[in-house]
Length: 151
Image (tube, rainbow, N blue to C red):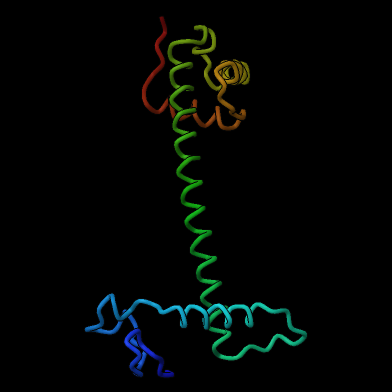
């Protein structure tokens, strides 16, 4: 590795935070290091006729690709969490509607298209978007939790 000036002006090897015995203060980046990294990044991202990259530039591209992948995974996890919450909310409403709200004739045959469409109508009136297939799955889940009341 190239030697660089430390904050105190002394020349020495640049220490990485992963090395044993290196303090956080030693791992801090200087403005000169940040500026050099910016220049390397600009040079790496410039369009080229022949895609040839130096080893330093390849490391920059690898870091950018890893960072992008990590950001995508984080976004995916956040969006899945919201979708799971929304599905659980819909599933609870379908269970409630099927057991206590819809007419007795719909509870007799819960898997019919008429029952599914009746529940979809009730969900729409309550501002919950649901497809026919989602409601069918939710009905199946509700039936697993126990028999429907017949009163």
